[in-house]
Image 1 (cartoon, rainbow, N blue to C red):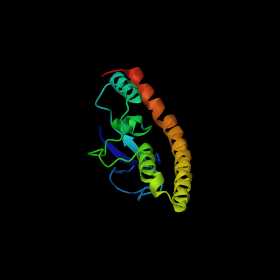
Image 2 (image 1 turned 60 degrees about the vertical axis):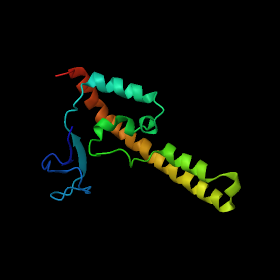
Image 3 (image 1 turned 180 degrees about the vertical axis):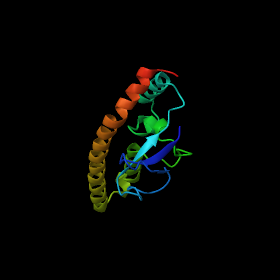
Image 4 (image 1 turned 90 degrees about the horizontal axis):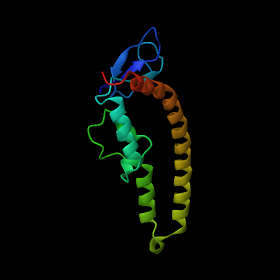
Length: 146
């Protein structure tokens, strides 16, 4: 499946490579959205795969975003992907009782605050994605394999 950036403005709809780091259309200034081609797998196969990942213990499969990585087709490798669970594991491993210092508490509290803010923003963006992508997925499901 291919992905690209498309201008949100109906009169413009200019397209740019997904790898470009731009947020507004250079032609008209409107916001850009990610536009995806038709997935390679049928809708029923994708649903089965995503359900199976919900019960997987792999950190990438447990992620609310990376579980649906077929719709993020612009990464060649998932080796560099970092999940919240991996960050928390690093904190737990790096903060053993033997090495504990008061400054660690400040770091942990700051990180928890950042993660809470990230979670809030992620929740808002996931609701937006659910409203924007959900109906399209539903259309694919209804249409069935072609």
